[in-house]
Length: 344
Image (cartoon, rainbow, N blue to C red):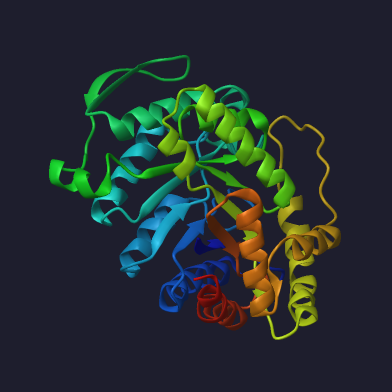
């Protein structure tokens, strides 16, 4: 089992964007000091829900500030990015970090981002498979051309590519993980043999069903048995540690609803479609019930149980739910020094 933090750079009410970003960077540095395995970085545009607009840029910074920690995007939004540009950046980080970078990608949402970046709604609704396949070819082949509905260009060389000696230790390119919220996206990832990232809003039962679906689809697509058995899927969740569970829950109930209310309400759909926002308090209570929130022993037991029930071996845990820098640092340290040893 590998445990990492999930960093949104959340802007809580009354905070500035710089404060949110500083807390995000500092929490990642503390994660390495505390012995966590990884940090996963979220990407959002134009909303205080998360103030990092480029997960891969923040990943580059953190790879430079750490020596052991694995750093991944959770996720880079593919419909609003050119797959080749994203692939070039991912390959660069893969080579220069010694293989510590993982590229998580997802469809994002039907947000105004699609208008701002000129992608259009069709890139979100229909274009994800084409973008994903082009990205994968860029990361695995020496040269690439395209003749699809969205992307058409002559053959060009892929630069940089790992040297032959480096490939033996690092593989062809960075790991690619796909965020999945539906059976269709699970099938898409499975057919390509890509591990999946499952969100914090669903519990163990639904995650187990999605992992089982991934395995069935991967086998049906002819993926190697070793690849299917060894796929390292990722579960996103929330973690808040205290000496008493009631204290951990109280910390999140005081801070998270205000952040969720202002953050989620700021999302604007590109086509003005109606959408229903979760009740912030009820959502926070749901997260406290689903994830490791409580004493170190409870948190370790909850993570172990989720892994056993779902077959998921990696965790990306939101540790900044208090909204406070000092409390976040303490939370990360306790996760590394009091929870992880119980899992190993």
